[in-house]
Image (cartoon, rainbow over all chains, first blue to last red; front, side, top):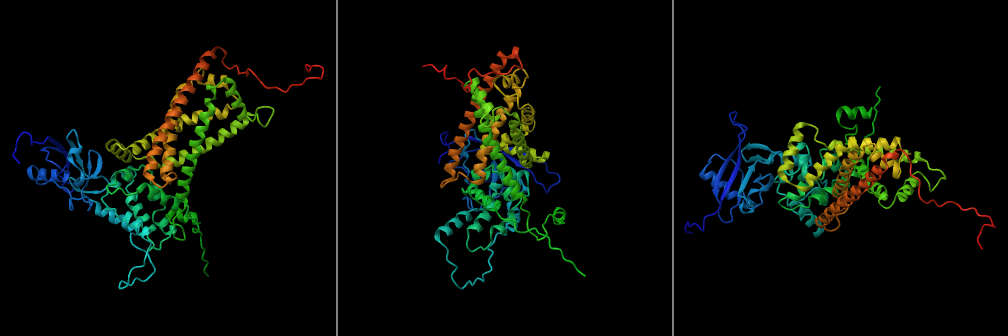
Length: 258
Length: 262
């Protein structure tokens, strides 16, 4: 395409945080870049161009470029978004401020480790099937109703991008909060008939103020989840379920010896 | 002993988690629900002045037990206000657990809320701010009513609003209560999924509209009501302290046979 005045895109202004926490000399600061917009430009494309043209050292994460891997979450003008699915044309004034997602460990610039956080969450909610049944992998898996399977897979669509955590003021204020991603995971195993855990078992994992009862229903998760997971509905369901768990324990056994 | 062990070790003796966080969460919601619904009723009763002084007087006497006793008993109002005050304190105590209580938390919340521009997060900020306001202005109002339960009526209330200089407090209280209450009731529905139905997202949109309509209705009603008390208070300032006498009272009629018109 010839480079005529008609084909020229508008100039975009990118303000990008740059900071390397592992370098004692580094101070967090914003750097401004001007870049010509191209047709269908996403933040993924723009950031690669900035890295190519101006800042070879700029750190940001991408893998799939299609909103599936959940690697490229970042704060775009204050809102956590997947950069690969964010079009520059959606910013009419052409000013785009990029910051790393808070609440996750910062590696450098826009690159954060969501994996470490998600790993902690997975361990906390024991994110695996709990069953006493011996599984024989040479045989077909136990059948379940298609509706139940659909409901389980619906919640399994979570890509652990961390956007629900970064859009939740509770999670930002209280770093030990399990987050919508953790509560969604609990709801997923609650639906799955392969998992034999009861409400009492789930209560032991998230029945406290850093779990289900810490959620203040700000609904940032519900409104920002890039996969449109039904987070409000599922968190409310788990809250009803766990708030009504009967108290059968807590008694003191006194052992007398001698 | 079990409680001491749990206190020190953060674990119950049988290794299970305490059910207290669940109870506190339920009590916070239940106390909020009670106060939210109570404030709707309260506003409707207080606004009876917009119909007439006589009507407001009748409503007042009803709460003093006129439907049960021959004489009014303001102690009934004192006890009712004491009960509401107790729920108010319980709710405040439970809800303040959610406040940002360190500067770092506050800074994070403020930065996030301003940057995110997310309606429900901002509504929570309004709720936290109005809740904090009500610790003080709500307590002043409740204590005055508790200790002066016999001084409620078309003139007594108007004198309190205008001549006693309470109207600025009531103006602040009106906005604090109506915003906090309607946001709180909406959030309760979201928190427990009471109104989710078959399409939770559509239900939320509808509920949000209802929430704003309710806020607008009660704020308008509240402002008109406060204006009515201010007006009566200004007109009545020279007779400060004088109580209202209803213009018409349905009294038992005792007529002898001779007096009955033929």
